[in-house]
Length: 458
Ligand code: SF4
Image (cartoon, rainbow, N blue to C red):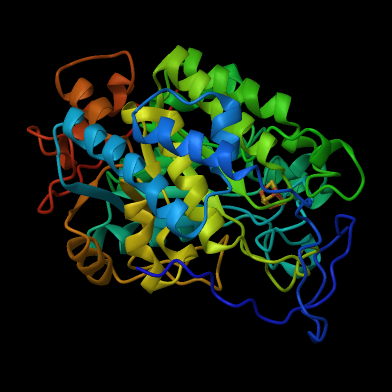
């Protein structure tokens, strides 16, 4: 197996400040350079050897050893991936599904592309004068959900900018005109609509949600999510950092969301964004922060380790994509640190098809949401793989691809048994209609059951 990184492509210059509005795509002439990645020296070979031996022996890794292992390349990387696979296989065995890799069949609903933040890598966000309407209408959302149901989808992912009404008067005016107190209020109403009209299960990804928000949203969504992205405060507080000018990317605030989601007992998806200028120490700190939340609250159902991909119409268009070997090392170290009780996800569309089997070799056990209908609105240049192709890749690596629901099986099984700790009882009927009672995974022949109107409106 070759782990050689792909050659990088030509791209344009970077700018260090967040755009007031996204800049238009430009002619690209300057070779891409790694402007946002800090220069890092490799550890002494003896330190890498020692850390590899500790990993191979199944010892718990401390932060220093984990950081050293991020540098494994070539044969060292192959050696690192072995114990990561062992932990993944143990995770599947404990979950009662050895040899099964999961995904969720879903549609993506971009409720609004307005946002109060200015992340330097974001191509999703736009400005009011480029939009015909500030938010998708309820009718448009229902059309997407119904088309998804007809295509066998069981999840509706609401993805959107963070609190745009705090930055854009046009967004505030739209909400006022339509009778919603906030964007989160509108997302809740849309979730009720989808549940009542289609029976598909909402997964909410609206940015910052504090404890009261989570309590209000809990009865309308079996799971929610927010990427931690990074604990590197300097990338948010210092000019030139990718999150400078983005109030919702303060790591302290995002860590509070993770803690609040745990206290609200919401099955929660989070993760890190790798290659946005964080150094190895910060990368390990980010993984360990998620591990702490998972251990304290038990609600972290899935950790996404997402590789940075530069987009040409963003301030980071001058940065290199994360190298493939560096990504594999980060996946493997994440798996070793997180252990066998958390699902590790890699988005399949952010790696090339020939690289996907290597993601499994590095300890991944879930492909996340894949849509047969709607694009990845956050990475529109990277189309989803066909689900049949993903199944073939997974089979060639020795696994079986199985569909899960938006909430992971352990939470689904708890709900099917009448448990009320995790998934709100208001959703149990809809979850049961889609779930395999033996495994907690999705039933391929399931028919969504729309929620009785009125029961969820208060
Ligand atoms: S918070 Fe999300 S939508 Fe808003 S600018 Fe950042 S990445 Fe884009």
